[in-house]
Structure formats: C-alpha cells, structure tokens
Image 1: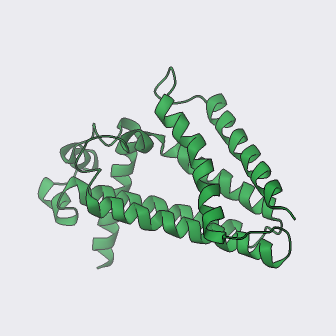
Image 2: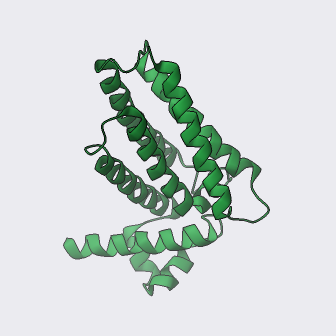
Length: 202
C-alpha cells in the first residue's frame, strides 16, 4: 500500500512540474509517462484519464496551501497581520502555479469536468470557512463589527481574487509576469485588505 501511495505521489509531482511549465492544455498523459519513465498502463492504473490526474494535482496543491495557512495561524495575534500572512501564502502559490491559472478558462474537457469543478468549489468553501473563523475571532474581541459573517468573508476573498483575475485575464507582454508585476499584485491585495478591515472597525 505504501509503495502504491508513493508511486501515485511521484506521478502527481511529475504532472505538477509539466503542468506548471507548459500548462495543462499542452500536456499529454504520454508526455508525463515519458518524463517519469513509467509505462502508460502503469500511469493509467493510478489515473484512468487526464481529469483524474488533474484532480490529484489540485488535491495536492490545496493540501499544501491549507497546511501553509494552518502554520500561519498560531503565531499571529492581530487581524491585519493574520490576513496579510494569508495573502502572502496565497500569493506564493499563485506565483508558483501561475500556468494552471491560465488553463482554468480553457475548453479542455479534462479541466472542466463536473467532478473537478465541484471539488474546487468545496476547497474554496473551506478557504471561506478558515477566513470566516478569523473574522469571527476579531468580532468576539470587539475589533470589528460584522452583521453577516459569511457574506463579508466571501466579499473579502472575492475582492482579492478580482485582483488576481485581472492579472490572468489581461495578461502581460510576456507569458509569465515579471517579479515586479507579481510584487504589484501583492501590494494591491495587501492595500485592499487594510482598507477592507478599516471599513469593519467600530
């Protein structure tokens, strides 16, 4: 069982490397098999199709993201610092997996399966729950006033995501934004977060 899990993880890691370099659309199952020097039957044993492999990749990325977020929570006291650290974690993942963002609007059936969409939705709901918990703690402490916690949390995350979406939709002269471009995105998100929190103060 452990050997099977290890093999599966190696395939996912190999897929992530190729997806983040070439994008999901331009990557085939055969190329991943060649990269890892595994037989096609072996690859398809673990992942029957491209959609199931993409799901495995998304699971891995979200698991790593939530683990990183969890590590930030215990050491932070203020609402501003907590949310700023969360933004920086999310931004690191955005930079690392930028090529996956470019694939999200494609017509590739492998990337747009109902199962995958439902899973991503559940992961986003988990992200909302984590942030809502942070906002709730600030409400209990009397730091902010919130009438509808879930609505405010969703608005906050959607506002941050809007900055990210503008980056992906409008694109840049180069395929991958420069370090300066990424820095601007981060600064805008941090500024928006500060303004948002200020608006919730009593």
